[in-house]
Image (cartoon, rainbow, N blue to C red):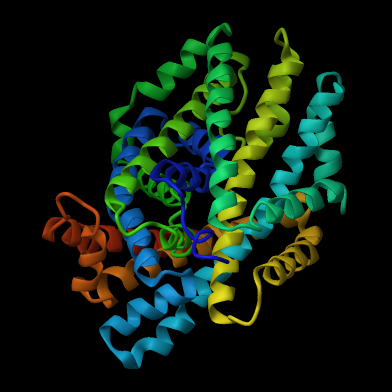
Amino acid sequence: MSNNQKKFASSWGFVLSAVGSAVGMANVWGFPAKMGSNGGGAFLIAYLAFILLFGIVGLSAEYAVGRRARTGTLGSYRMAWASRSRKLDRAGGLLGWLPLAGSMCIALGYAVIIAYVLKAFFASAGGSLMTLDPGGWFETFSTTDYSVTPFHIAVVVGTLLTLLLGAKSIEKSNKVMMPLFFIIFIVLAVRVAFLPGAAEGYRYMFTPRWADLLDPMVWIWAMGQAFFSLSITGSGMIVYGAYLDPAENVVALAKQTALFDTIAAMVAALVIIPACFAYGLDVGAGPSLLFVTLPRILQDIPLGRLFAIILYTAMVFAGVSSLQNMFEAVGESLLHRFPRLNRRIVLLILCAVCLGIGLHMEPIFKWGPWMDIVSIYIIPIGATLGAVSWFWIMRREDLMEEVGRGAKKAPGRLWYGIGRYVYVPCAIILCCVALLLKVAF
């Protein structure tokens, strides 16, 4: 990939691409479902607190590390550990394989759910989704092997084709997909506002029960959702940082990414939560929110077919933009580690691996346990390894130099102290709690 292809052309293009990576299933069904089952307004307060912390400290650190290493996950971990001691160079390089594998594992599961969404889009466009029983329809294809294979292939191949030109094509596609995503969900949110009973949903979202803030699990779920939503996995955002111009202010860009990601989550919640309250449906239903709950609502409103097409178009955009980041993180790292490979060969390898493994996970009884492993183990462990590597292993001077590059006023000891003594413990706590919950349940 040429130097031109390895750079984002503008800070706005970078932010849209980073937001595209962060905005996905974590926002559109994950955030409303978690908010719906963890106290509504109380969860929102905890979530916003963690978004503020992780956006300013964790996300900007990943951008800075990637930019300093000028490559993806493997090279960044090697660089961070070698800055402490040349003897740790190899250890850092080996450690980087774990969060990198995490990106690939997330991609395998993401591709399946986007295939579901693409199937729903065609069912909406053809009109069948407006007349059939959504529950039976979803159960039929989500419990059958190879039921969405054509859509699965289209998602994987189509996404990889958008990566042929690296940062250049990622930026161009997200400049189209992300504005459309926001416009589409704003239109849907306005339509939902006119549903009888929607006001109850707004009250639930914005009127916190203060006693719920005393429940530690509300904070734990909010913390996990913030990590997932911002795509802080110790891998994905590093590669976008590697394509950043040295003159850019990484802290400012991280704040912008967190802001637009939060707006996306809130707009999605303003569609789903009031709609569920209006129809007396379970707001914490998870994936079935998209394929059972919302179709039932859309069947019952004027122009429901049009709104269904709009909804699933936005969902495809959100999913593909996230999948781009996961594939790019793996692809760039492999190109750095094995320089004799060219970009097209690496993308073909990723396509073969994703389809070879992913096609067997299409039924939800296989997909669900796989994504449980990803969310309970891989994301928290990757985030923890990254946090420890940047704030406890990497030389403080190196990290601070890169974080301050391009800033009118460089972050100081407070930024680093929060990263070391607040952000890192949060990552460790999340990792431990996730493991304990898995053992307990």
